[in-house]
Length: 246
Ligand code: ADP
Ligand code: MG
Figure 1 (tube, rainbow, N blue to C red):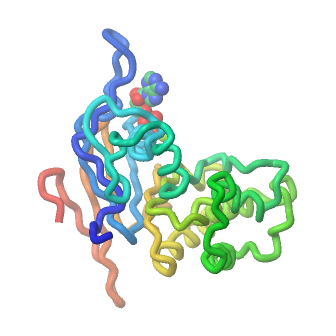
Figure 2 (cartoon, rainbow, N blue to C red):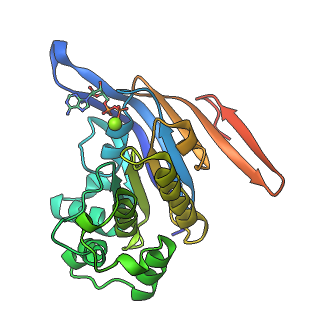
Figure 3 (cartoon, rainbow, N blue to C red):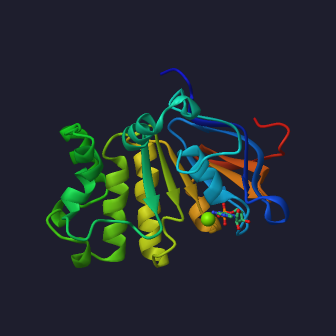
């Protein structure tokens, strides 16, 4: 795959409801998420952050526009193909961990692969487990793990299939700041050391500072974009207005 963009939204609009109760949750949004980069999506409550993530992940149907994931136009897929794309190409991390309580950490991590009748790449899975430091917790069930450990299992589960992109919606929202920072460091490591692509919704500027780039939404539109340029001795912050990215 030569496309530097793991996921692209082009002129995406999403309208909920009809007539007087109509809500334009996304208004003509175009954005690209580059492969091997960590992007944060910020914006006030109700600005469309979750809606953008759901439309891009094929969890919610958009009203207008198009989305590609790993060069695949999701509108061209039937339900079964879309389910397969979500399972094989997209990883999800939610605020509420969403682990299966009766399964061990190891089983939870492998569950999406097992559902797809896929053993996965064992070398990769071990690398992921090591990266999130879960080696000695694999036989524990979620109730025997702390919140931070549960979210580490969820991050490992999202990484297990070596997806094209991971969408995380407020992944540290239920964690104290120390544990939250640990999760953010793991996600940063997954990008830097494992070459993964992560898009994370957050309203916390400290969490967003782990990202390479911040997309700000306001009233369903992209208000502005910010990129960090890291050099050995210095970090540059560059702000772009909507008209001229780069
Ligand atoms: P954010 O994640 O930035 O807080 P959302 O994407 O959840 O915002 O919501 C954007 C707008 O769309 C809000 O005005 C919200 O009330 C509305 N909205 C979201 N989901 C639905 C839904 N299922 N039905 C109707 N309106 C919705
Ligand atoms: Mg939200």
